[in-house]
Image (cartoon, rainbow, N blue to C red; front, side, top):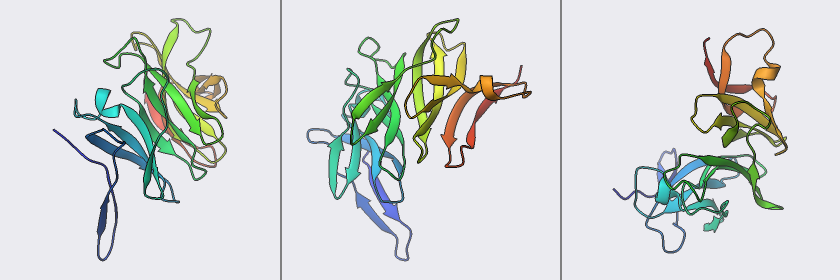
Length: 198
């Protein structure tokens, strides 16, 4: 089914406003908003739920217009997940070899540098090939997940200013469960996410 992006503010009276799709697209969804009214989301063609070709374009809505944030080489799964007050955007993008989204790549987009890949953990066994970013704060600390190809070993990670990721499990002290996914980070550096009991 076709779905469309919108933004609304609670009244009274409540106000709902449609957001424009990227030219030529037919479906979309808004995924995050900051305090400045900048909104990010997806724009694409009617496909499966919210993903694959529905996420042909990762977009930013501001000043009544829509901007394509680019991609990392694939025309699918390009999905922003968070935007900070500076207008920096993070999310995940498709891989040209995996149209079904089996492997994704975290990204950070800034007005200064455009879109760039946030790599998964390195020198890890099993090798990590998938990365997804879910949260960003004002200091440009980004959190998300890094996984192996089979998604058996997934680790919560932090990219500081988009640099090499750090496994949050290396920083957890005596906490015994494995930190699997980091979902958000505030300006104090406090992180929420999911842990898996041993």
